[in-house]
Image (cartoon, rainbow, N blue to C red):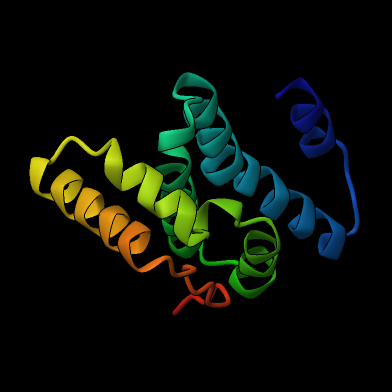
Length: 123
């Protein structure tokens, strides 16, 4: 935060100043929130929750949504179906856990692979 204060306090051309303010706002509203959430609950089963919350924060941020979502899509390892099943197996809701167990048992019984769709998002 000290570095951001230094950048904001200096005088820059208006175009650059707006970009720095947008970057500072992104760091405070989206990045730091996601980072601190991931550090406080770093277990594998919370990865999909962190990803979902980050996407929601980016959508509410508004500026440069397409650019930010492209970065999320390239790094969305927790959107993989296997990660979603792991998260469902550890969910607080018993119905979600039961559905996940039944899905795993069905996959084992049929000896099938999980399809891996490309990650997508909607504005």
